Length: 326
Image (cartoon, rainbow, N blue to C red; front, side, top):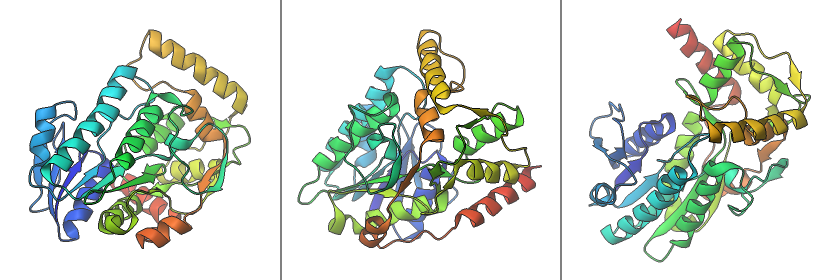
């Protein structure tokens, strides 16, 4: 197939584009900056999801779309989240159908159905923008509903929700954890015992590639993807810190205090935005203090997929990456 991958300048997007190409497909990428891909035969197109003409150009001649591009942040203007995540997805869906594409994989997030309470062995719940926490989750939920509503004969749509994707070179989750731990600003919320599952980047990418291949059989569905190895958040943070050679967090903040502080910080950031992500938000406090792990049986059966890299192997690879850069 000829496949367009949006958002290939990010860690997961690059891994997906590479995986789609290695599966024997012709790949074109579309994002604002260069993808940095060195895989032979990948065409790189630069543009924004908010530019309708650029979107129309990107989808021309494509048989399938894998849509990862999004505004991902804990803070920012609501209108920008709406323009990129909702408006961009709506325009991409319309352009893909008009161009004759037959498959569309929307890369979503479990946050679209997370209302701040523990998730213990659930399957993928229906996206719920009304109860999603923050503009990122809200707009991703709206966009997922738009994508699945576009599923139709001849246009197979699948939503894939990789959960907390990480790996070497990760500038989001891993880099922020390590930076805050190094500066002594990474607390444990509550007792640190909440079970959390994550997804190593290679596994997330292979699941998305599997969804692309299985779209005609599983269209209209949403799937949460994880490693299937939930661990206490304290153990997970300690493993990441050990891999990076920094001390793990030892001081604790009550979960309720962190949530309240997160709400106050969000309000302050809206009035006077900082140059970086806010140090805490209510959503982040919820993520670090409540259990969230998922039943993977339907995902693995429907996508005919299994994760290839265990959590421990992923941590070993992360440690090797830090050793290489030291």
